[in-house]
Image 1 (cartoon, rainbow over the protein chains, first blue to last red):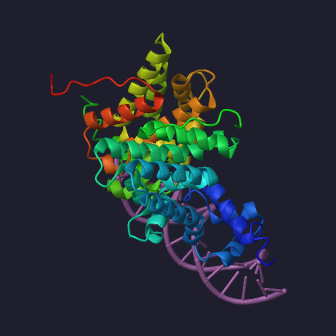
Image 2: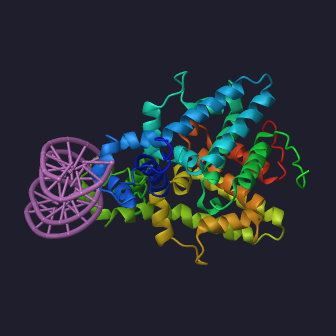
Image 3: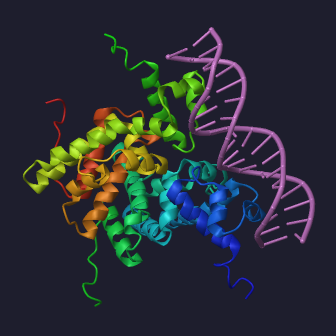
Length: 197
Length: 197
DNA sequence: GTCTATATCTCGATAGAC
DNA sequence: GTCTATCGAGATATAGAC
């Protein structure tokens, strides 16, 4: 039971708070003082848990970056190109919905990108965003395909984290993002069961 | 002829430099010292041209924000919904290509958004981004349409400003972005003349 | 129009009490 | 594990010489 309250201990609350403030003000626009104030502690208390601000930024990003790498790896195992794309898209959207703020932040924030590129690399040494794009666009994509994938990647990630959709439930958001992604990538769009059947 | 060298005078060079640095490091991640160093002048020289950093940020954003409002207004004048959407999309993409860094910055940077929302409002009192989205999605859009438009808006803007496409010429980039936008919005995609014919 | 110099503030980060 | 107190650096911004 010692780890039972992991979601409410100070370190976890700190990361949640940091993610929220990073999303709102950007990494560079968020000071340790703001994080400490939001938590109701002092800066020194924050420094007990993390040695530097970069370490906080890295800890915020790490889980999703690692997951993104796994999703790309899983998708690569599929035999047909179509199945690879479908698998990658599904996994990507699932991750966006589960971590709404994080994927958008990763896509847009220079401070976050600096830290991720410096410290969180995929097993192949290639960064995870490139890996994901390669699965979606193919090994040596045409410019048209590369741009399409770029639009999907950033568009879905930022829509998923947009404040205007914060109140939408996971299932609904996931279906709409998947639909947009499939349309853009030219993938077939399966009909969903119409009323629970 | 006194305004003939407008593009090379210090104020214009300052705005160009600021835009580039803002895109690279974010507004909050860019100091006046960085801008001054890049220009080869001192901070005090920068303060001769602008009273505050917010004023620089506003001056960087202003032209494109105003143009975006005009594009939405022009598109609203079209009679059919289809023509409105086509006109808005075409104008939007044209603006993205002409101002590659700016539209992405406007979509992604919290510091830029803060200043724009505070000081640069459309004639109707509605912010220009919302106005553009309304033209594309309709007056009272379904959630699906709203999300699709959000993906188009952010995806195209960020792809247009992405460093990996900086070397692509305007015509090529415009056609690829238009194509992606039309696919996502379900608009017909006209065939282009195949070889100069 | 650009400079030097400086005021004032807040930043990230550390030391040491409790 | 959290606090007070403080450091040096770098931030925005201003005053005034040239």
